[in-house]
Image (cartoon, rainbow, N blue to C red; front, side):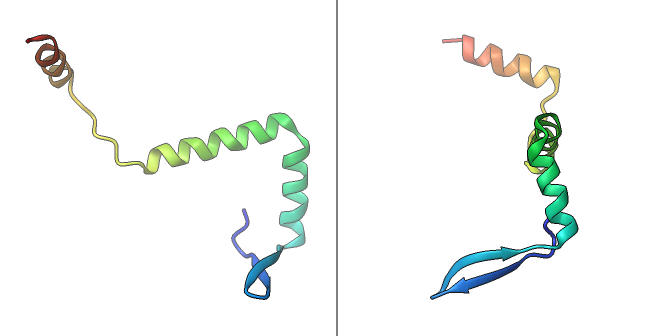
Length: 72
């Protein structure tokens, strides 16, 4: 969605965004339907989390970390 956007500037500042009419209709429907909008926002969140570089730990690593934190 919004892959081809033309930005129109005025005095060096972005003033308007021109998008494909079909994309406009899709956005209009998405924004007018709360359930679809929530689904789309959930999808975007999931994609964002997938792109993060998350370090996974084994169960043993978690246990060791918890043990080290509890030991004075």
